[in-house]
Length: 267
Image (cartoon, rainbow, N blue to C red):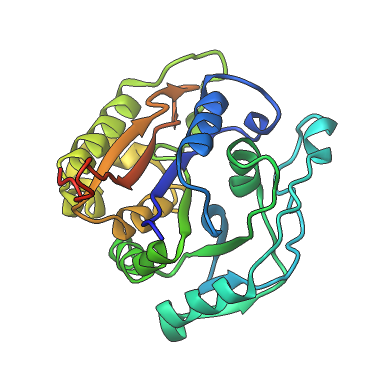
C-alpha cells in the first residue's frame, strides 16, 4: 500500500459547498489525482473543543454549523460512513488526551470540501477536534503521532484557513489586505523551505501575525498536517489566493513522489 498524502485545505465560505468556482474545481482535480483513501481523518476548524475528541459514530450526522445562508446549503447531504476502526487507531496514536465522541458528526469544514473531492461519499470519514487548550506545538506533535496512519491508506485532511479574520472581512474586496498577503506569503515560504519552527512560532512573521486570526481554530489544522508530513514529501501549493480582504484560500498537499526507479524523491 502506497503512503497517502497529507492535505490542508483553505475551505473559505460555506457557499463553496454549492458553488462551482476555481477553488472547488481545484478540490475536484486533487480528489481525482491522489490515490483513493481507505478512510479520511479530517481535522476541522469547526470542531473546537476543550480537550481532543474523535468522532466514533458508525454513521456521522450532518452538522450545519453556519447561519444565514440560502436554504439550498442546508439541503446538502454528504452521508459518508464513519469508521470505528480508524477512531480506535487515532485514540491509540494520541493516547489519553483523546476522547471518543459520537455526538458531533461531519461539519461544513469537512463536507463542503469532500463533496467535491470524493462526491460519492463512500469513503469512511472520522473527524478529530481541535483542542482549544493545546498549543501550536501540541498540534504539530499530534500530527507527527498520526503520521503512521498514512502507511495504512488514511488521508490526513486538515480544513481551516491560514488567514481567517471575519471581523475584518471586506465583502466587496476580491483580493486580500496587504497584511493578509504578507502573512500568507510568510507561511508559504516557510512551508516550502521546510522551516516548521517558523510556522509553529508564527509570530515571527511580525505585525501581520497579530491580524491573521483572532483565535487559533482555523490555523491549527495546518499544524496537524505539517506535523504529519515528512522530509521526503513534495509540497504542492494550490488555491493560493486571498479573498474578501481577510480570508486565505491557500492549501497544501504533501505527497511522496516516486521516480521511475521506484525510489522516493527528496525535496
